[in-house]
Image (cartoon, rainbow, N blue to C red; front, side):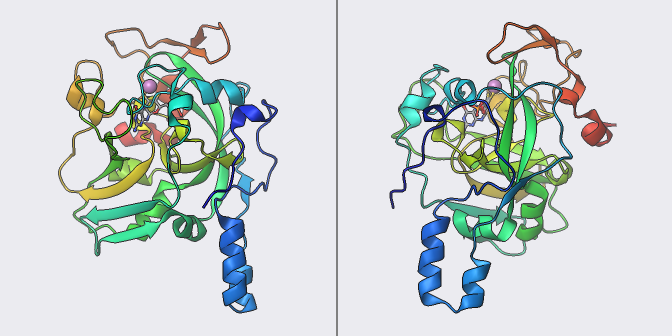
Length: 300
Ligand SMILES: Nc1nc2c(c(=O)[nH]1)N[C@H]1C(S)=C(S)[C@@H](COP(=O)(O)O)O[C@H]1N2
Ligand SMILES: [Mo]
């Protein structure tokens, strides 16, 4: 299927999504097909989910300009050059996309992402994002709470962690370019995964995620360094034992398992300040990236 989605930089940048903008994929066509085959009630149910903006999550700064966010990316499976990811990732095939669930669950499951989005519904949230490289951005994600997805997965009572896997495709140009062994993997405790802030994003700036941002499904855990928010997720595995995570396994000295944004905890390079993309500002980084009220209790 080929529906051309305009790239962010082809459109006027700056403004975030007006409320209610439709942000699904293939919904129009899926709806047409369903409408042809199903009775009217089913057709109505298949209407694209609207993504209203949540007012609960507020920013202390302007949104990053869309084009800037879309041209400075970390997605090492493509390249380590931040400003080249968008070009190399442009042709990534993300539709159809299946998401697999296994491990300590009542029953292993797999979903077509479009079906999953219909089940979950969509909302928009304005979140900050802080990379351990000390740049930051503030963006509107479209998606659904990870907690809602966890509930759908029916983890067993013994489950304590959620492990997640990124796309596995050795043909991606950066796959064998370094010593790193892909696929990229991450994990949260189940309590973190159920925290209201943990979010699975399918869109940004009111449109489906472009590949460089981790299409078609990526995590957003804004109280943690950006490296926890893995991209292009294909699998979720519930575990009892704490699973490894990509950067903590590679370099435990530089990256803790939790990787919470804690600016005053000594770190091999300073984390007390950040520079928002598109500015030259040296801005103070806040504990838990400004989300302490939501998450500090998890670590008390
Ligand atoms: N699969 C995968 N996910 C990833 C990464 C990566 O290299 N591969 N980089 C992480 C890092 S370090 C950051 S800061 C964010 C960047 O997200 P963005 O490019 O959408 O801003 O993605 C995270 N998710
Ligand atoms: Mo990062």
